[in-house]
Image 1 (cartoon, one colour):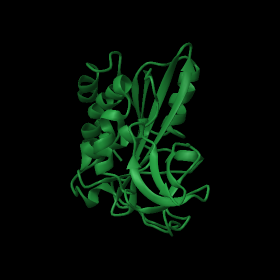
Image 2 (spheres, one colour; image 1 turned 45 degrees about the horizontal axis):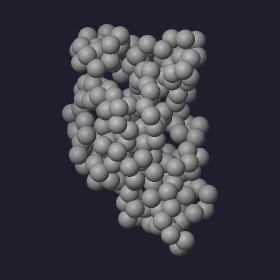
Image 3 (cartoon, one colour; image 1 turned 180 degrees about the vertical axis):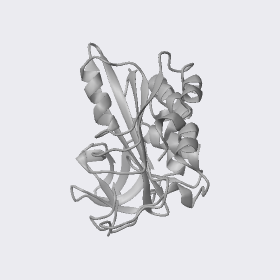
Image 4 (cartoon, helix red, strand yellow; image 1 turned 135 degrees about the horizontal axis):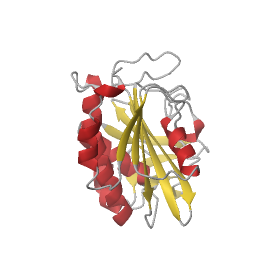
Length: 256
């Protein structure tokens, strides 16, 4: 793993600061979770825009409190005030796909897939301060080969598609476009991203089952990022953060 001095801090700050005044880039050698650290800071009143990169995480987290570990993780924190927060994780995922490789797919609501296997995950958390909110966007990506012990489906990694990419290059590809995407989302919501998300949707026209037992055929997402599911009772919109989605017949050991 690169040392803190190897990261292109000045280049990243120069690329992002025009869109995010006051932004700074920070690297910690080891932390429990970069998302947890930025949430702690936000609760203490530290709400400046920052990209915090953790070279090692001892307690990386995914959606619904699941453990998630990868060899490349960072969290972007910034004040944000969209009219509608719906679909933010989808817009973030799409931005990363567009930055890395056009053949990557998106699994609603927060994963990047390659050939049916999880390559990256997104975790979004918010904290209120006064009348505003601070959002923390956590991203974990498998860059190098990873073992699949304990998983029904082995993970994917980015070097399968881009053999020469490393963590520094991945960050340079992702960081500035991600900030621009979030700023567009703040102004216009998810609607500008809907069509392109659906072009990368790994679940579109796939039979899926929800964690609450509902089954149907996924029909893409709507203008607010809700999953549209064709069921025996008709088309329903799935928005609950407490619902996970799996292709029908997938093992509970698969990453979600």
